[in-house]
Amino acid sequence: MKTAPHMKKPPWLRKHLPTGPGYEKVRRMMTGECLHTVCQEAKCPNQWECFSRHTATFMIMGDHCTRNCRFCAVPNGPLGKPDPKEPERVAEAARSLGLDYVVVTSVTRDDLPDGGARFFADTIQEIHCKNPGADVEVLIPDFQGDEDALSVVLDADPAVLNHNIETVERLYPRVRPGADYPRSLRLLARTKALNPAIPRKSGIMLGLGEEPEEVKKTLHDLFEAGCRLLTIGQYLQPSDRHLPVERFVLPEEFETWRTFAVDLGFLAVSSGPFVRSSYKAEEMYKAVSGHVNDRRELWERNSL
Image 1 (tube, rainbow, N blue to C red):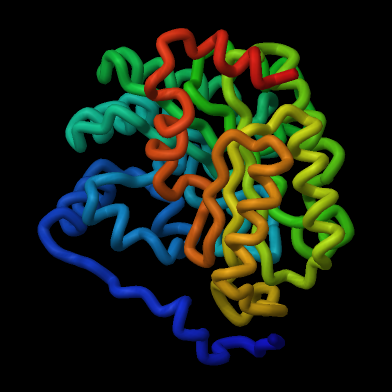
Image 2: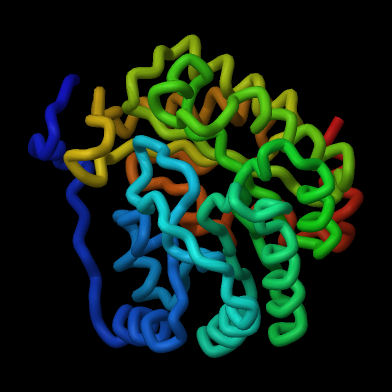
Protein backbone atom coordinates (compact mmCIF):
# COMPACT_ATOMS: atom_id res chain seq x y z
CA MET A 1 0.00 0.00 0.00
CA LYS A 2 1.90 3.05 -1.28
CA THR A 3 1.31 6.56 -0.04
CA ALA A 4 2.19 10.14 -0.87
CA PRO A 5 2.69 13.01 1.59
CA HIS A 6 -0.52 13.83 3.46
CA MET A 7 -2.37 10.90 1.91
CA LYS A 8 -5.40 10.03 3.98
CA LYS A 9 -4.50 7.66 6.76
CA PRO A 10 -6.31 4.34 7.07
CA PRO A 11 -9.00 3.93 9.75
CA TRP A 12 -6.71 2.18 12.23
CA LEU A 13 -4.44 5.24 12.34
CA ARG A 14 -7.16 7.67 13.38
CA LYS A 15 -6.95 8.46 17.05
CA HIS A 16 -9.08 10.43 19.49
CA LEU A 17 -7.11 13.24 21.08
CA PRO A 18 -8.04 13.38 24.77
CA THR A 19 -7.42 16.77 26.32
CA GLY A 20 -8.49 18.18 29.64
CA PRO A 21 -7.08 19.13 33.05
CA GLY A 22 -4.45 16.37 33.06
CA TYR A 23 -3.16 17.23 29.61
CA GLU A 24 -3.06 20.95 30.36
CA LYS A 25 -1.25 20.44 33.66
CA VAL A 26 1.60 18.56 32.00
CA ARG A 27 1.79 20.96 29.06
CA ARG A 28 1.91 24.03 31.32
CA MET A 29 4.49 22.43 33.60
CA MET A 30 6.84 21.66 30.73
CA THR A 31 6.48 25.17 29.35
CA GLY A 32 6.86 26.84 32.72
CA GLU A 33 9.94 24.85 33.69
CA CYS A 34 11.56 25.26 30.24
CA LEU A 35 11.59 21.51 29.74
CA HIS A 36 11.27 19.58 26.52
CA THR A 37 9.50 16.31 25.83
CA VAL A 38 10.08 13.99 22.90
CA CYS A 39 6.29 13.72 22.87
CA GLN A 40 6.01 17.29 21.60
CA GLU A 41 9.29 17.74 19.72
CA ALA A 42 8.96 14.50 17.74
CA LYS A 43 5.20 15.01 17.19
CA CYS A 44 4.32 11.70 18.82
CA PRO A 45 0.71 10.67 18.10
CA ASN A 46 0.37 9.49 21.71
CA GLN A 47 1.25 12.77 23.42
CA TRP A 48 -2.36 13.73 24.21
CA GLU A 49 -3.05 10.34 25.76
CA CYS A 50 0.19 10.29 27.76
CA PHE A 51 -0.12 13.89 28.99
CA SER A 52 -3.70 13.17 30.04
CA ARG A 53 -2.34 10.25 32.10
CA HIS A 54 0.26 12.58 33.68
CA THR A 55 3.18 10.87 31.92
CA ALA A 56 5.75 12.23 29.50
CA THR A 57 9.17 11.38 28.11
CA PHE A 58 11.65 14.08 29.08
CA MET A 59 14.08 15.17 26.37
CA ILE A 60 17.27 16.69 27.76
CA MET A 61 20.10 18.83 26.36
CA GLY A 62 17.96 21.05 24.18
CA ASP A 63 15.51 20.75 21.31
CA HIS A 64 17.94 20.72 18.37
CA CYS A 65 20.05 17.78 17.21
CA THR A 66 23.52 17.48 15.66
CA ARG A 67 22.19 14.87 13.23
CA ASN A 68 19.52 15.12 10.60
CA CYS A 69 17.71 11.78 10.45
CA ARG A 70 15.13 11.87 7.69
CA PHE A 71 12.37 10.30 9.79
CA CYS A 72 12.62 12.54 12.85
CA ALA A 73 10.77 15.80 13.53
CA VAL A 74 13.40 17.12 15.95
CA PRO A 75 15.21 19.94 14.09
CA ASN A 76 18.91 20.02 13.29
CA GLY A 77 21.10 22.76 14.89
CA PRO A 78 21.98 25.39 16.02
CA LEU A 79 23.08 24.08 19.40
CA GLY A 80 23.75 25.75 22.72
CA LYS A 81 25.42 24.49 25.86
CA PRO A 82 23.25 22.16 27.97
CA ASP A 83 21.68 23.88 30.97
CA PRO A 84 23.40 22.54 34.11
CA LYS A 85 20.18 23.07 36.08
CA GLU A 86 18.08 20.94 33.73
CA PRO A 87 18.64 17.59 35.53
CA GLU A 88 17.28 19.12 38.74
CA ARG A 89 14.26 20.57 36.94
CA VAL A 90 13.49 17.21 35.31
CA ALA A 91 13.64 15.53 38.72
CA GLU A 92 11.35 18.16 40.25
CA ALA A 93 8.85 17.76 37.40
CA ALA A 94 8.87 13.98 37.86
CA ARG A 95 8.23 14.48 41.57
CA SER A 96 5.39 16.93 40.91
CA LEU A 97 3.76 14.47 38.53
CA GLY A 98 4.10 11.68 41.09
CA LEU A 99 6.03 9.46 38.69
CA ASP A 100 7.60 6.26 39.98
CA TYR A 101 8.84 5.40 36.49
CA VAL A 102 10.57 8.15 34.52
CA VAL A 103 11.66 7.96 30.88
CA VAL A 104 14.48 10.26 29.78
CA THR A 105 15.84 10.68 26.26
CA SER A 106 17.88 13.36 24.51
CA VAL A 107 18.76 14.93 21.24
CA THR A 108 22.01 13.60 19.80
CA ARG A 109 24.90 15.82 20.91
CA ASP A 110 27.91 14.82 18.82
CA ASP A 111 29.33 18.26 19.62
CA LEU A 112 29.94 17.31 23.27
CA PRO A 113 33.09 15.37 24.22
CA ASP A 114 31.11 12.55 25.84
CA GLY A 115 28.00 12.92 23.70
CA GLY A 116 26.07 14.06 26.78
CA ALA A 117 26.65 10.90 28.83
CA ARG A 118 27.45 12.81 32.03
CA PHE A 119 24.26 14.82 31.57
CA PHE A 120 22.26 11.59 31.39
CA ALA A 121 23.98 10.33 34.55
CA ASP A 122 23.32 13.59 36.41
CA THR A 123 19.64 13.44 35.44
CA ILE A 124 19.29 9.84 36.62
CA GLN A 125 20.96 10.68 39.92
CA GLU A 126 18.82 13.78 40.48
CA ILE A 127 15.65 11.76 39.85
CA HIS A 128 16.77 9.06 42.28
CA CYS A 129 17.59 11.73 44.87
CA LYS A 130 14.30 13.60 44.63
CA ASN A 131 12.14 10.54 43.93
CA PRO A 132 13.44 7.71 46.12
CA GLY A 133 12.37 4.36 44.72
CA ALA A 134 11.65 5.70 41.24
CA ASP A 135 12.94 3.73 38.26
CA VAL A 136 14.50 5.57 35.33
CA GLU A 137 14.53 4.31 31.76
CA VAL A 138 16.95 6.07 29.44
CA LEU A 139 16.70 6.18 25.65
CA ILE A 140 20.23 7.07 24.59
CA PRO A 141 22.01 7.99 21.35
CA ASP A 142 24.98 5.91 20.19
CA PHE A 143 27.65 8.25 21.69
CA GLN A 144 29.58 7.61 18.43
CA GLY A 145 30.63 4.26 19.85
CA ASP A 146 32.35 5.71 22.94
CA GLU A 147 32.32 2.89 25.51
CA ASP A 148 33.52 5.17 28.31
CA ALA A 149 30.47 7.38 27.74
CA LEU A 150 28.21 4.32 27.86
CA SER A 151 29.82 3.27 31.16
CA VAL A 152 29.08 6.69 32.66
CA VAL A 153 25.36 6.20 31.99
CA LEU A 154 25.30 2.61 33.24
CA ASP A 155 27.11 3.56 36.45
CA ALA A 156 24.17 5.83 37.32
CA ASP A 157 22.00 2.68 37.51
CA PRO A 158 19.11 3.18 35.11
CA ALA A 159 16.35 0.58 35.30
CA VAL A 160 16.38 0.10 31.50
CA LEU A 161 18.90 1.02 28.80
CA ASN A 162 17.05 1.74 25.55
CA HIS A 163 18.71 2.40 22.21
CA ASN A 164 16.61 2.25 19.06
CA ILE A 165 17.82 0.46 15.95
CA GLU A 166 15.00 2.32 14.11
CA THR A 167 15.16 0.50 10.75
CA VAL A 168 16.86 -2.29 8.80
CA GLU A 169 20.52 -2.03 7.85
CA ARG A 170 19.95 -1.48 4.12
CA LEU A 171 17.92 1.67 4.77
CA TYR A 172 20.40 3.35 7.13
CA PRO A 173 22.05 5.59 4.49
CA ARG A 174 18.64 6.95 3.48
CA VAL A 175 16.88 6.98 6.86
CA ARG A 176 19.72 7.57 9.35
CA PRO A 177 22.67 9.03 7.39
CA GLY A 178 24.59 10.00 10.55
CA ALA A 179 24.13 6.66 12.30
CA ASP A 180 25.68 3.22 11.87
CA TYR A 181 23.80 -0.09 12.18
CA PRO A 182 26.71 -2.23 13.48
CA ARG A 183 27.65 0.51 15.94
CA SER A 184 24.17 0.48 17.46
CA LEU A 185 24.31 -3.30 17.83
CA ARG A 186 27.72 -3.04 19.47
CA LEU A 187 26.34 -0.51 21.96
CA LEU A 188 23.61 -2.93 23.04
CA ALA A 189 26.06 -5.83 23.23
CA ARG A 190 28.52 -3.75 25.24
CA THR A 191 25.75 -2.79 27.66
CA LYS A 192 25.10 -6.48 28.23
CA ALA A 193 28.80 -7.07 28.90
CA LEU A 194 29.23 -4.09 31.24
CA ASN A 195 26.11 -4.64 33.34
CA PRO A 196 23.92 -7.64 32.46
CA ALA A 197 21.52 -6.73 35.29
CA ILE A 198 20.28 -3.71 33.32
CA PRO A 199 17.76 -4.79 30.64
CA ARG A 200 18.37 -3.74 27.07
CA LYS A 201 15.53 -2.40 24.96
CA SER A 202 15.25 -1.33 21.34
CA GLY A 203 12.67 -0.34 18.76
CA ILE A 204 12.08 -0.48 15.04
CA MET A 205 9.70 1.38 12.71
CA LEU A 206 7.87 -0.30 9.85
CA GLY A 207 6.63 1.36 6.69
CA LEU A 208 9.91 2.77 5.37
CA GLY A 209 10.41 0.23 2.59
CA GLU A 210 11.87 -2.67 4.56
CA GLU A 211 11.37 -6.27 3.40
CA PRO A 212 10.10 -9.04 5.73
CA GLU A 213 13.39 -10.95 5.63
CA GLU A 214 15.23 -7.77 6.58
CA VAL A 215 12.95 -7.27 9.58
CA LYS A 216 13.57 -10.86 10.67
CA LYS A 217 17.32 -10.35 10.42
CA THR A 218 17.12 -7.12 12.42
CA LEU A 219 15.17 -8.79 15.22
CA HIS A 220 17.67 -11.67 15.23
CA ASP A 221 20.53 -9.15 15.40
CA LEU A 222 18.92 -7.32 18.33
CA PHE A 223 18.34 -10.55 20.21
CA GLU A 224 21.93 -11.68 19.67
CA ALA A 225 23.12 -8.30 20.97
CA GLY A 226 21.33 -9.01 24.26
CA CYS A 227 18.18 -6.97 23.71
CA ARG A 228 15.16 -8.50 25.50
CA LEU A 229 12.57 -5.69 25.38
CA LEU A 230 11.25 -4.60 22.00
CA THR A 231 8.89 -2.06 20.44
CA ILE A 232 7.60 -2.17 16.86
CA GLY A 233 5.58 0.73 15.45
CA GLN A 234 4.39 2.44 12.28
CA TYR A 235 6.51 5.19 10.74
CA LEU A 236 4.49 8.37 10.17
CA GLN A 237 5.82 11.24 8.08
CA PRO A 238 6.22 14.36 10.28
CA SER A 239 6.32 16.87 7.38
CA ASP A 240 6.92 17.31 3.66
CA ARG A 241 10.66 17.53 4.35
CA HIS A 242 10.79 14.01 5.75
CA LEU A 243 10.73 10.61 4.09
CA PRO A 244 7.30 9.58 2.84
CA VAL A 245 5.56 6.53 4.24
CA GLU A 246 6.09 3.63 1.87
CA ARG A 247 3.38 1.47 3.39
CA PHE A 248 0.76 1.50 6.13
CA VAL A 249 1.22 -1.78 7.96
CA LEU A 250 -1.96 -3.65 8.87
CA PRO A 251 -2.64 -4.17 12.60
CA GLU A 252 -2.65 -7.96 12.13
CA GLU A 253 0.85 -7.79 10.66
CA PHE A 254 2.06 -6.06 13.82
CA GLU A 255 0.64 -8.97 15.79
CA THR A 256 2.48 -11.39 13.52
CA TRP A 257 5.74 -9.59 14.24
CA ARG A 258 5.00 -9.59 17.97
CA THR A 259 4.53 -13.35 17.89
CA PHE A 260 7.71 -13.80 15.86
CA ALA A 261 9.74 -11.77 18.37
CA VAL A 262 8.30 -13.60 21.39
CA ASP A 263 9.06 -16.94 19.74
CA LEU A 264 12.58 -15.69 19.12
CA GLY A 265 13.01 -15.16 22.87
CA PHE A 266 12.21 -11.53 23.62
CA LEU A 267 10.72 -11.23 27.12
CA ALA A 268 8.33 -8.37 26.29
CA VAL A 269 7.21 -7.01 22.93
CA SER A 270 4.89 -4.09 22.23
CA SER A 271 3.87 -4.06 18.58
CA GLY A 272 1.20 -1.92 16.91
CA PRO A 273 0.58 1.09 14.68
CA PHE A 274 0.82 3.63 17.51
CA VAL A 275 3.60 1.96 19.49
CA ARG A 276 6.63 4.14 20.17
CA SER A 277 9.79 3.34 22.11
CA SER A 278 8.62 4.94 25.35
CA TYR A 279 4.87 4.34 25.00
CA LYS A 280 3.62 2.59 28.18
CA ALA A 281 7.25 1.85 29.04
CA GLU A 282 6.45 1.31 32.71
CA GLU A 283 3.87 -1.35 31.93
CA MET A 284 6.34 -3.24 29.76
CA TYR A 285 9.08 -3.16 32.37
CA LYS A 286 6.85 -4.14 35.29
CA ALA A 287 5.10 -6.88 33.34
CA VAL A 288 8.45 -8.63 33.13
CA SER A 289 10.27 -7.69 36.32
CA GLY A 290 7.80 -5.99 38.66
CA HIS A 291 7.07 -9.19 40.54
CA VAL A 292 10.73 -10.25 40.83
CA ASN A 293 12.68 -9.30 43.92
CA ASP A 294 16.13 -9.95 42.47
CA ARG A 295 16.27 -7.86 39.30
CA ARG A 296 19.94 -8.70 38.79
CA GLU A 297 19.29 -12.42 38.78
CA LEU A 298 16.39 -12.08 36.34
CA TRP A 299 18.24 -10.10 33.69
CA GLU A 300 21.57 -11.92 34.04
CA ARG A 301 19.70 -15.20 33.56
CA ASN A 302 18.08 -13.90 30.37
CA SER A 303 21.28 -12.38 28.96
CA LEU A 304 22.77 -15.69 27.89
